[in-house]
Image (cartoon, rainbow, N blue to C red; front, side, top):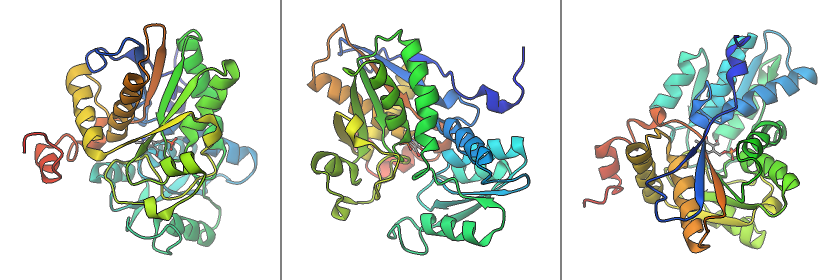
Length: 329
Ligand SMILES: Cc1ncc(COP(=O)(O)O)c(C=O)c1O
């Protein structure tokens, strides 16, 4: 029994119970451990789906170049797909991303262009604009665009949703996930709600993102945008993949709470994960406490990526101290 390529090892990640950090909560709290994917994140799922859908539509041909604006994880997934299928890759990313993430992409043979973080999305220097421009200039290139490409949501509808339904034997009552492009929350929730429309969907956002206000008022307010350090969740745009009609509550989490929970999950649960995982767990547990979830309820929280990409940041005491994220000052 073997896999035809590493791409066949994507998905079917385990659901694991949180014990110590959720001790005070009666409900069963399970996490879906996406760092056990071959590219160490949930984004492997969408990478393979976006490229295979593009191949079917004739949008990319053998020997072509994949170009994407990515905070690292999608790039890693796309780089794996490209390596197996024989494509070139160019990624644009922001100077906010960890050095480890950028080095990892280069290790897989990708070219990486680093762009400034604190510019408007439509500024020609932004990583969105640079990726779009390159895809116009380079022949036989394909720009998957995880923000607008609905294969992103479809990947989660086809894989993450059914896995959670099957793994919980249909007993899930609450689903919580961070919201970046929106693909994870929208695709998974759409599947789960088709199975049971009573399931509550909780979106986790970062302080400094437009999502919470957009959820509450329907208004996109640029004034909500503030710098923050949690990577992968929260947005300054409203991507096509986010479907707020599926979401019942949005919880915003700040960097300090996110990163302290990230470290607690590693130390107390043995889950070596990234900062958006800490945010998701912190926000979801806060919701579970506020709603007083009982022993007949079962919550699943998505843990999108691995701690290995944050060793010099969240797992480094000096870095945490510099940002006043440790409690000891
Ligand atoms: C580390 C991390 N966490 C969470 C997310 C959010 O997932 P989605 O983009 O599907 O909303 C991302 C997306 O980039 C991510 O990289």
